[in-house]
Amino acid sequence: MPVLVIGSYNTDLVIRCPRLPAPGETILGGTFAQHHGGKGANQAVAAARLAAAGQVHFVAKVGDDEFGRQALTQLRAEGVDTTGVRVAPGQPSGVALINVATATGENSISVAAGANEHLRPADADTALADAAPGTVVVLQLEIPLPTVLHVARQAAARGLRVVLNPAPAQPLPAGLGADLYALTPNETEAETLTGVRVTDAATATLAAERLHAAGISRVVITLGAQGAFWSDGTGAALVAAPAVQAVDTTAAGDCFTGALAVALAEGHVLPDAVAFACRAAALAVTRPGAQASLPTRAELTG
Ligand code: ATP
Image (cartoon, rainbow, N blue to C red; front, side, top):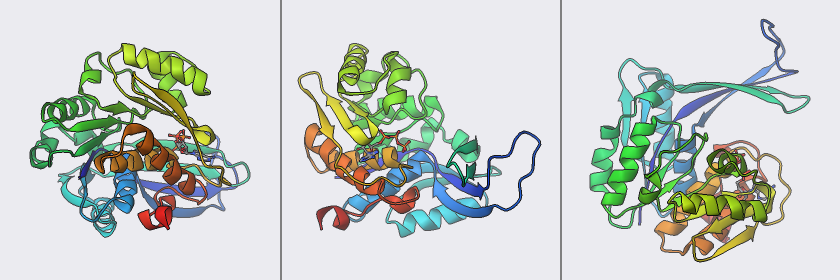
């Protein structure tokens, strides 16, 4: 069954430089690279590499510019159905400017949301109306909150399962929980949403209890190298991450959410879907880059 991702696309412009520039300072001697990013696009590509052909659909707004055209070409090459990706007239694509200090690995990032800010509630209506029964709808918070709330409400009303990755974290309105199948925060997002400092399974249990009390039925909290903790109100457990040599955890969370959605769409129960997502994300962290690190299904099963 299909996965429908509704979210952001950003072009990441990365300069690796000797150190991060101070305010007003110019630093020479860097190297430049351009990457496809944005949580929505990362999760769509993560899902497309793991799902059967033609099963992943993406709804987004890209800019009326070269970055937007490159995004569409690349998403299609990844096997993502881009019927729902629109160009926002006169708007630039979302851009993240990333400086990385080569000596320390520290970074500084500024993001201009551009076309992402113009993804309106109605932009998702056709994709939702066309979604097959059993579709898993995946949302994040890099698009306007009214769009997220509308999609969740419409999808739930159609009996579709909604997975919300609440990143970047922000307070969520009461009532949203009733429209969600599952919420997938990382440790810091779980803390923002619950006030509980989440560091391990015990504190994740407490955070999950608070989220259940707020009306969210299923919670999956990612815990980095520890793995992921799931709780559905009737059961709860920590799924340990496979032990790997991590070289770059960028997009680990996006890989996890994309993989979780694929496994749920394929009919797996939550604990099995979490285990599948942990295996996918563990492979992603062994390789550098964001989308470049995302595994294929053959790599996971082979
Ligand atoms: P990021 O912001 O780097 O994309 P995140 O903070 O959203 O990640 P994490 O909780 O750090 O999310 O990682 C997501 C998942 O990736 C974890 O639940 C785990 O399954 C996997 N993972 C992360 N780090 C490691 C690691 N060192 N070894 C194995 N698996 C890992």
